[in-house]
Length: 476
Picture 1 (cartoon, rainbow, N blue to C red):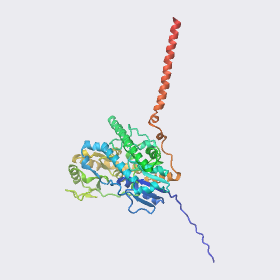
Picture 2: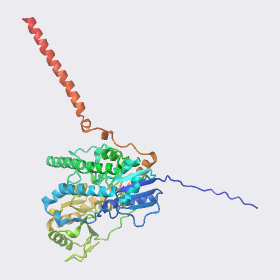
Picture 3: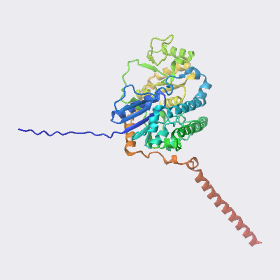
């Protein structure tokens, strides 16, 4: 007897896209935010080609890693805290000195990248991709490639908005209520804070336009051999920009749909482990700053405070050992702490740390300190404050709000990348980006209205005087 077997096969299909990812910034902390997203895209079947300074050691089979290692020094533990311990110099470094150095480094790196053998194949031979992912930070160097490929692009931002980013996609960036990321302000500012915020905002926007954008435009056009649209316009044509922020922690911003908050995307699939009864304290200055360069008086103050605690302290330390190390201190950031629901002492040093610390303190569960004001008394008071039940409760509540979203940040990011590739780009930015400053401020409309009202008033006055003169002539 012949038996006929009918096999029912369920075939699951997915749209697999070819994704070209340009991450030219040599900062480890930035890449740590983006790496889980690249892995997730590959895991979901997409083919991902990544150009970066931090190639994955064991990449997914769907990932192609193109290494930029050797073209620039990696930004890992390069900031010496002893150089910014002076309050005045620290403030200056955060703005003028940092801006000057960033401009120099950006232009040197941009030129190296454009003339490197690594990018030569991507410049001279256009491979077939569906979408380009590019980091939006302090350089537009890769925007020339975005334009050359003529593909829809998705922007990535590992931090809060930089001063020149919002207006590119038509988001309002009024400094009267939008605090700069390098300033320790929230959206609730005093008059003098708004004044300082406005001046710094104008300074950074013009600095970026003159010292970076113009120079990179020149470098790109010389390398590619033809003129380009303004790099700011190319960046503004991004279908969507995925920003590593969330309003519960970073404050509320008025944004068009093109800006999508995916704060905590790098914490994908991580679980929070329960602590022991006393718990422990994690002390770290992150990947950019060398904690071992702390001035001796600051280090002594911190160690004295830790010595009086019952909690174990895990400290990210770059040297072999610390002298007079308390027995409860062992050697080994803000979003991670919020996700875990633990309170923090945020020691602002430079860059966006000032803004992040201010917003975290306002959101609850954090206390802000400035490095130049840190001593045993202030640090001890801050640590004791965050260990109180009240601060722990605030931190847990903030964590619940931060986690309570329609979709996890990773799923949100992948959705918008796939949607951009599927439809060949998205129109989600505001038309405000197409208007110049006079049109945006309605100066042209106001000028016309003033002329109309002025004409009406002048005509009325003229007619009244004419009528008065006629009546006077008749009466005489």
